[in-house]
Image (cartoon, rainbow, N blue to C red):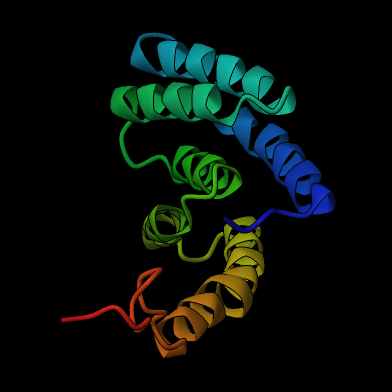
Length: 142
């Protein structure tokens, strides 16, 4: 698994805090989503990314397709090492709000990391020759 640099994670938490304001202070499902976002942000701030992800997904179920909630889901997936799912979530957020500069910048940062580390590693893994099972090719055959 690829480790995310500490600065990237810290930046992601900061971005989560900035973006969380979009759902705060509303009533009904929006208010419940806001509460889930608050819990998620606290969990993310403590490094509990799976808890944060669960909270962000609950917020998304209450207010579907909020681009900032989708972005927070993407950040939590990224921090959890689930890069392919994070890519889809970032793209979903941008599909809803393609002109949002914060989302564009966050997606670009992730995509650069993804292309450089995940895609290249996958290509290297595919190109590497398979090693024979242990003991294979040693005398003692039939």
